[in-house]
Image (cartoon, rainbow, N blue to C red; front, side, top):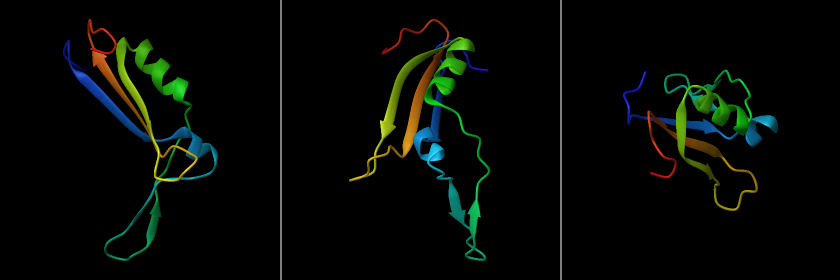
Amino acid sequence: MLRDGGTFYLAELHPYRQFDGTQTHVEDETTGETVVIDAFTHSVSEFVNTGVEARFAVQQMREWWPDRDKTPRLLTVRFGAGPVVAGA
């Protein structure tokens, strides 16, 4: 729950990467083993529309590309709670 004027920030591995089979992974500092993080694939519109259906206003959406890469790495969406005008 957010107060009026509050902000919810979503940062997610970009769905394009997940559709291509990429999954977030980390290295266990103790064992050095690669640990794959469980993931559920969602489209960009699913993230945005779910926020709007929950009565959040989309204030900003960005896609982040690594240098020289053809596929964005991250999707970020900043949602506002309450009577917020997009872009404010």
